[in-house]
Image (tube, rainbow, N blue to C red; front, side, top):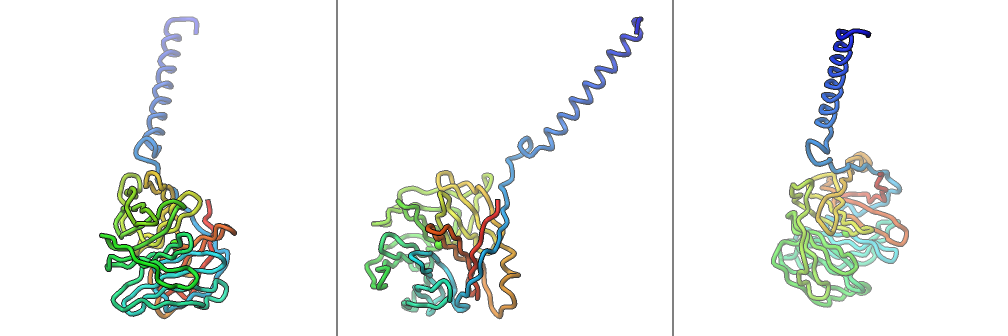
Length: 270
Ligand SMILES: [Ca+2]
């Protein structure tokens, strides 16, 4: 490469290489989701840890775990109830029927009081946790779907993409968030559970649970529960996945569905 021609050849080859490298880099950036659009929300699968029996006539609308028992709210007119259930056997150890005009929905435990929503009746019932003796009611202007609490506020869903945070003693709204997946509202939020700083929500009509940031309403992960269908085995009548309960003492997560004959302890895989 002692002459001018050799040098020009070398420089032109170098430019060509640089051009190809630049093109490759641009293609890489264009293909990267963080360049083109927001990163997809992670989809987590699950592992079944344990299977328990569940009353196949229970149209589950609310579920929680406290002091070794499940507490359940069931729906449908004329069949709505509040129940205390033995986890191991599925036996209903205490039950209170709602008057037929009420359709039971979400359920949470605030201190020693169980609070049960109704679907379109605009009324929540408050009961003593041990005796199920009615202790009062709250009125609200929306439909009632799911109910949970984060230790300071009640969290309520109404079938829309909005979660409202309520003062537990008065049911007054403190704040609200719209639940979104990369900016798109996630509607039909149903049964709720607050688990270690996140809100878990069944999305009605799907086999998925959304993990939601309480601060922003953003879905931080989806949980795919479709494998539970197969685990249910042959069933005569079975409705949608609904019902999430968390045992904070033993870090156990339970899920079931409307009229499901089984209740599952699951682990959400990373
Ligand atoms: Ca729950």
